[in-house]
Amino acid sequence: MQDGYLTISVINDATNRPIENATINIYGIDENQNNTGLVFENLKTDESGQVRNLTLSAPDIQYSLEPSNIKPYSEYIVETIVDGFETVLIRGTQILPVVEALQNIPVGSQQNIPRNKRSKKRQNDVIYNIAQHTLWGNFPPKIPESSLKPLSAPTGFVVLDEPVVPEFIVVHDGLPTDSSAQNYWIPFRDYIKNVASSEIYSTWPDQTIYANVIAIISFTLNRVFTEWYRNQGYQFTITSSTAYDHKYIHNRNVFDNISVIVDEVFNTFIRKPPTARQPLLAQYCDGVKSQCPNQMTQWGSKDLGDQGMSYQEILRFFYGGNIVFSQANIVSGVPVSFPGFTLQVGSNNSYVRTIQNQLNAISNSYPAIEKVREDGIFGPTTEASVKKFQEVFNLPQSGVVDFRTWYAISRIYVATTKIASLNPVI
Image 1 (cartoon, rainbow, N blue to C red):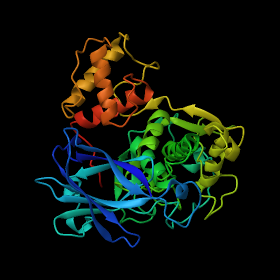
Image 2 (image 1 turned 90 degrees about the horizontal axis):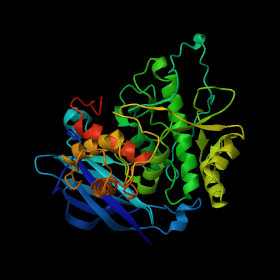
Image 3 (image 1 turned 90 degrees about the vertical axis):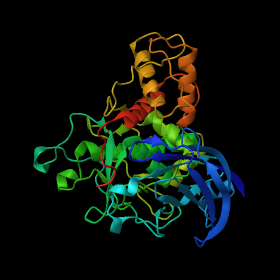
């Protein structure tokens, strides 16, 4: 056994604000999904709603680095108790060795779900049963389809003028034709982090993770760009079925290194000439339980990462040497787009003032983030506030506002200040 790590964040789902002093209990689960008893008891969340850097046992790292008949991760039950709310249990938080798992706990999210549709197993408890990782569990393989969609008038498709990163992805949690499945409104980056954490192991080489994340982004932006499901009469963007799309697992944990990589490249996608605009529907399979000629295999991408290939080389190996990498210029749902240069100590401009204003607004919900003077001057106080934000939201604590920190601040600013928010479940 080796050590894995866990950080828990408890959020009031109605207000997007952290909950301080929530009680956290963690229980082990054996191979038969039986509760093996308490591992941690009566932990309390801090002013940012967090319990950080817990150490938990996980299998040896070798089991996640090659196909194995031994489950490469351990599972735990995370119980959250908050006065005035139903108790929430996440059953199946996955812990891999060496890396840090990030488990968000939504409290109060069941209020808008009819009682007969709630995920409940005990009186006064809300239980989310987390599915197995796709590389371990049994899931249907992807049904092959054209990686580039016809965009001419006879198809009836209505497409965007250019690829746009949407604020939300509407995920249909089942087969496209299953009208009883729930639709979830998920922030775009959170969706990509969830899928990547469900479909690859975060112990893999960084360049392999980059390659798989960009394939997932490109696939998802193709669904957005072509309005694939909406043009078939459905009211969602994508499904959680591996036969049609990717595996999204509602309220599962994600992994810290995957989260950081997604924040860095969330607007990057693949194009394949001669198409001028369309993101490639970058399909893949695991390469062990299923095969997919002319597409990426996840275990194959891991092997190429071990050989020292870059993510560009990995993706070109599978999808062709003529693919190119592009960035969506428009990111929806943010007040101001990234200026194109990093803000740091010594910077003095209106973009610094924008960040200072947003940090101060976020500080109303996360008081650990120190308020700063909104003068447009990036000094030591602004640097300290940025570092604390990066710590709370699991970013590298550089103290500078680069691409990923800019959009992370924008996302949290919008989430904590938006007056009229979308209903998370319809």
